[in-house]
Image 1 (cartoon, rainbow, N blue to C red):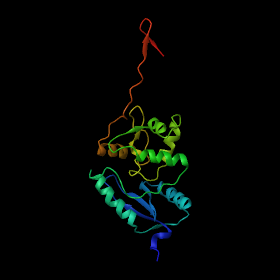
Image 2 (image 1 turned 180 degrees about the vertical axis):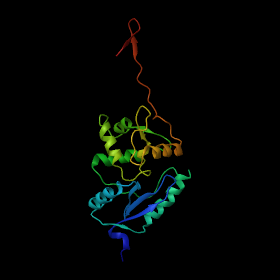
Image 3 (image 1 turned 45 degrees about the horizontal axis):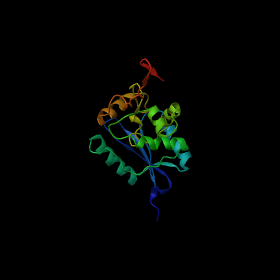
Image 4 (image 1 turned 30 degrees about the horizontal axis):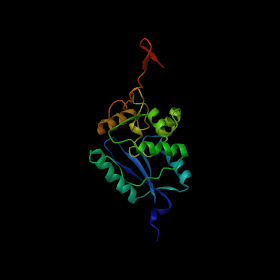
Amino acid sequence: MKPKNADCIATQEIETPLGPMLAGATPDGICLLEFAAPGRLGPQLDALARLFRLPVRRAKHRHIDRLRRELDRYFTRRLERFTVPLVFPGTPFQVEVWKALLAIPYGETRSYEDVARAVGRPRAVRAVGTANGRNRIAVVIPCHRVINKSGALGGYGGGLGRKKRLLDLEGAPAAPPRTAPPKRQRVDGGRPRH
């Protein structure tokens, strides 16, 4: 016998220190975690229903129960890596970017340029920003760890105040780690060689 929520995207609200979030789950895992911003959730839920070809219903779900426990541990600094199963369909490029976000360690940041290099597309910085903004599983797929190479926060669908608080919670630096530029070789008369 199938569980009641096997043929739908189950949703529940989860209270967090940064405000309420809406979580969604399919039988395969979490497919949504967004801050409950007016005007943003309706289109997000409609898009999920089309993407998964499933209706969206308020319902209990074991993956959401597990996510709630993990978020509680995360917000009390007792969890650095989420283990709840995730489902994040998208274009091949989006999925690559989201996997690269999952590889950013807790307490660290990367620039959009760093992520573009990590997915083997160093010139696709803007496309990385777009894919980052389309991440439907906030906090767990840590798009908040991506900032401008200048150290500015950049954007965040949940609001820059929340992004700053998430980075502060993790103890993340204000700027992504920098790699040293290559040293110029000196030849003839001490002039730099390019």
